[in-house]
Image (cartoon, rainbow, N blue to C red; front, top):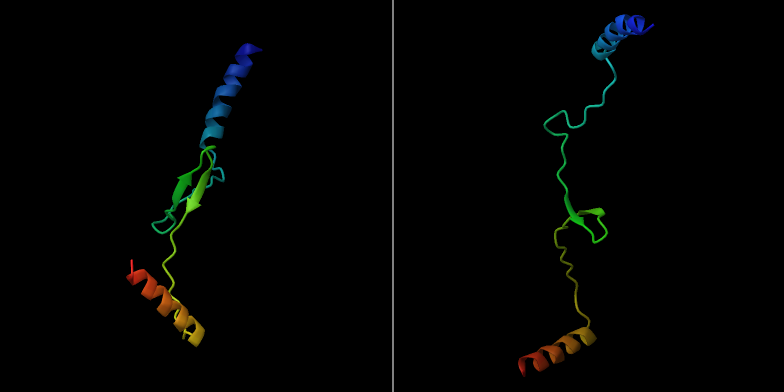
Length: 79
């Protein structure tokens, strides 16, 4: 029995090793890799980290806002 398993088992293992299998291949192309910055938290979790560009919002000030900021600037310059 042992010799039968050895005679059949070895060729079968070799045959199975060379059979085409559906293997997943991640990152196969030059544009498939997306680099992401990450932070490792205290408990070992990896959290993706990204920096967004700044956004500037401009609006017209009301008379009340103009008075507030004029007073604030006056106090700031007095220091």
